[in-house]
Length: 119
Image (cartoon, rainbow, N blue to C red; front, side):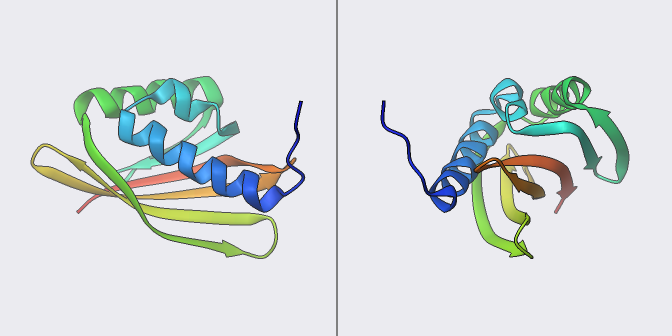
């Protein structure tokens, strides 16, 4: 077994996997990266959810607005423990901006906040 010692590599890998999950419309794969509690805001409807509840909310969003594409347009960090991604989510006739905030922990990232806003 080969282990990678670089947490930067793991976090970059996490960002790519998160993007792939969103592009595929897979709430199950995305939920792997959810923290125990997730703050979700979808077009102004906000709530704090457990990991399982957040997966259901995102699953409903993906059903209502199936993805045709998702691209991360900006990545950044705030301090050494917080990183964020801004992406554009395309669905038939509608575009959304998604802001994902993650905590860096244990060599990986866990999503603690997602803000989905119709453009």
